[in-house]
Length: 166
Figure 1 (spheres, rainbow, N blue to C red):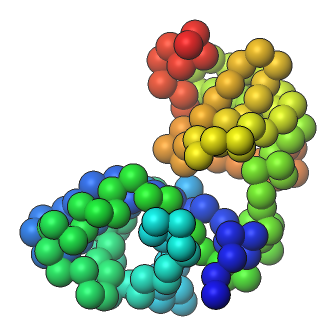
Figure 2 (figure 1 turned 45 degrees about the horizontal axis):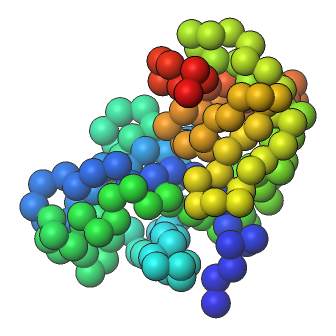
């Protein structure tokens, strides 16, 4: 059985690609599919491994994946919006065992806004996990995170315009 505490989010399924079951996926960091042959998805509350049948790079941070047994656009549509997980043991040492609370104390620096603040807490009471920065809330979305500086404890983001005004 696969448990959430043994996994870390590395990306997300964005959309289907073509009609043969391929999916465009975004990733937070470079994933070497030469050494990693499966990913894990949360399907209806159960963490399920999917073996990667084929992959190819589209642009930095984006890849097109095809999973074994997913052979149509209709099958692939069911995965849109799902986070992609890898077992922590397969990640480089500095990325192993990261949980949302790991980021408490990190400074959030946005590409357009500059320094947004320091992460005080994590609100994971709902399915949409939020970083709490004083009175500001930022959804934990892989597309918003551009880089993580573990040494300096800085989370570099590119937040959608107007997000902090909600």
